[in-house]
Image 1 (cartoon, helix red, strand yellow):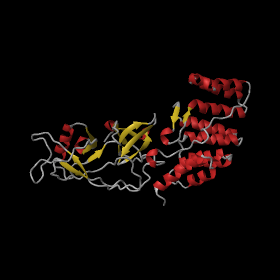
Image 2 (cartoon, one colour; image 1 turned 120 degrees about the vertical axis):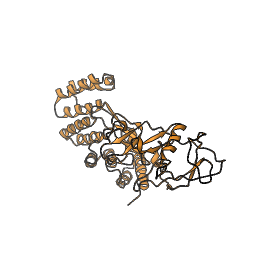
Image 3 (cartoon, rainbow, N blue to C red; image 1 turned 45 degrees about the horizontal axis):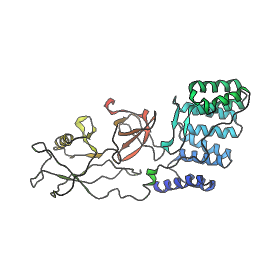
Image 4 (tube, rainbow, N blue to C red; image 1 turned 180 degrees about the horizontal axis):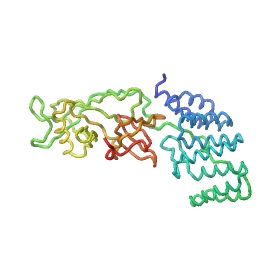
Length: 374
């Protein structure tokens, strides 16, 4: 089986082939990417539309929405393919399905997923009206556009008012679609990790400066207080591509050299007595508590990095359901997983970190850790 790095490279080169108008090369490269079935099928459908083959585009978009039934932009583009084939009833159905998958939101921004396109509800309603026109449902088309204008009056100047005027004169409309040449592209952070990475790495040293007095770390066999701990990361979970800083379990050792410079550590420690969650290390007193709480623990002190490249953890959530990643930008979830939330993508998606992996996942699959029922 081809490695994820090889597939990401093909994905990137396929997007570049689209940009230069090499449809055959783009289709060949996209078809070789096995890790992204829905997005690659979507990309291939867009290429077929550009190449003037709506039948092949329809087959590709069929695969895309079958593999990801929530892909609103996939239903939009499949509706466009139906429209070009004069299958207007099917086009109307797909545009309505795209509206359903917006789930009441006025917009879905696909930029975070690698597609430079923002699907807006008023545009979907515009397409609904375009299909209704072709079916001779002029009154329904006018009502659809009037509803869109009433809900988003600021969009009227972008063509809705003119479209309503044409419909009232029984002049047909052409549907809106993803701009030509726009396809799902790999995030730049995946491209940065195409070269082989030694995940074992070398042992690193982290300086710890305890308060004076009895509240301090355990002492080494030689007597002086421990100032340094050797940090060696564990391997990431096999079978997935690890991005950013990994969640690691540190193995503590002793070091007597006082000249090692301290480093900044943004992280948290595992404290089962505090609700079985990672406790952020925000101040020196938190670090002291970590030492005290784990001094007699058989497994020792377990630390993890917080976020990626210094990004703060906003809060933690607990997975209530399993979620299977649809591509490398997604984060696998298993019921009971604790996830560090790094950002909110939109009303329905979060970006998070778990076990060394960064990705996005549906907000509806998790609850705040503070509200979880153990």
